[in-house]
Amino acid sequence: MNRSDSPFRRRALLVAALLAATAAAQAADAAVTVLRAQRLYVAPDAVPIDDAVVLIEGGKISAVGARAALTVPAGARESSCSGGVVTAGFQNSHVHFTSPVYAGSDTAAQAQALAAMLTRYGFTTVLDAASDPRTTIALRRRIESGAVAGPRILTAGTGLYPPNGIPFYLASLPKAVLEQLPQPPTAEAAQQVVRFNLEAGADATKLFIATPQADRSTKLMPGEVARAAADETHKRGKLVLAHPTNIDGLRAALAAGVDILAHTTLTPEGAWPEALVAQLVAQRVALVPTLKLWGFELAKAGVPAPVQQKLIGSAQAQLKGFAAAGGQVLFGTDVGYMTDFDPADEYSLMAGAGLTPMQILASLTTAPAARWNESARRGRVAAGLDADLVVLDGDPGADVRRFAQARCTIRGGMPLHPR
Image (cartoon, rainbow, N blue to C red; front, top):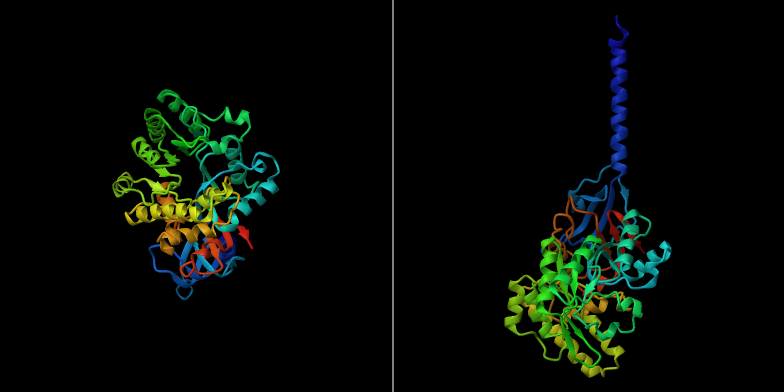
């Protein structure tokens, strides 16, 4: 009898195969992380799940559901972030990387700076709304390589300004820096700046379309310049942001065809005209309110508290009217320019403008994912999406300031900020 065909050999091969399969299965199970949630907000428009489980594997969400209905694989490891209230990772849609620490080579200091400004507050993706692209793109490379723990960075790179229109609040920058800020005088020059910026790695174009000057006047970017910059950006499949400053800036942004307004406007008139809001919504222009920024700026300028309250109230009225008309709101705080990093007041101000907790959650998750055409990748807690998650200490549905109380910030399944 051929021993290679013997029952003993066949049995040995079968046992070996079973042992190998078992070992492989155990290894796969060990790669699964289970994140338990007291409450899980799958998405702003979905019913939350209490006593829920999120399974994470290979940087992706592999399963989501109530604990009683979901089978956790044997050998799966428990996340150190388990507990609390879980949502999809947040996006801050207006930040800047202007601190000198980001231009240096101290990766530990950069990770600490990113944690202090962003990841400790649940931000797994951020939009840099204009910084030195050499600094920001190099920082992004260090983060993506794993050298620095930080959020995913989308960047507008270098902003474009009106001719002789650098805003007064940048006047203190070094002369060498000011001379590098592009102020294209013609459509062709604007197209050239946009091409250079996007080819260098930028994800969007930022137009400082109306800039406040020291003499209290406002410089407007020429219409043909703004339109050419926007058209060149759209031709390359990218988005355009605009800093509007006032009503004239809003109209100029609409005429140029921008996609995102980087601010509300700091004017005493109150809500924007209904016809203007209707046009913004019809053209699918999104709004980043940056309400807390106004108090920060007005306090620096020594404006009396009653005047501050009136101006901030006007910005809240703008947000309220825009959201009520169906406009897309994106959360953003202008940190990096603003040195107060805590977003809790922004959440309170948005709620004061009439936004519900779930509208605020949308501005942090599903709305930016949709705006950047990434809904199939992020913005919700669902199987197949990136495991970008936030674990909050309390339920923001009961108190919106709890959006700022991140116990853990998880990107690609790995904790960026465990407390």
